[in-house]
Length: 170
Figure 1 (cartoon, one colour):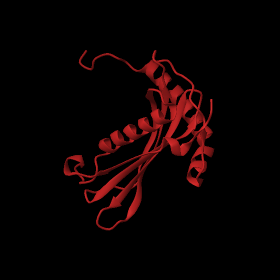
Figure 2: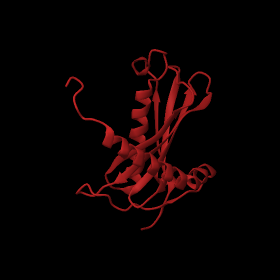
Figure 3: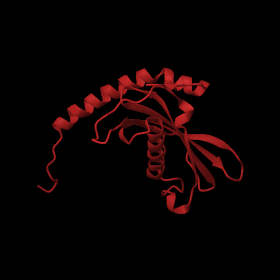
């Protein structure tokens, strides 16, 4: 399977922050931003695999700066590394003061998606070719993140064995 350039999976969504999108602090609601993040990441993964995908994990969402109603929010994603059927997608969120033009990295996230065939079974995906310094830097640490993800998943499985599914009122 031929590798694809990282840039071929790049997706950018820009939105204005409206009053219904804000929390009690008057900044963009984190859940709204997380929805944007999953949306663009899924598009990047689908664009890379050219197959249906499913979110396997959200490794991290780090909120670095609040996003205000006078800002636009630009959510950019791209596939940064791949496994056999999995794709690690990096997402960066840039806030831009609409009146000042000041831009900040407001959040970053790593998500993993798996490509699925018509029977919802994992299928192989192409590798990636990073080109820019940003892409190369993110790509070179992918194996470390994958190892951490594997350890976290095993811990989640152990925890799930301990947890109950009983209704709280029973």
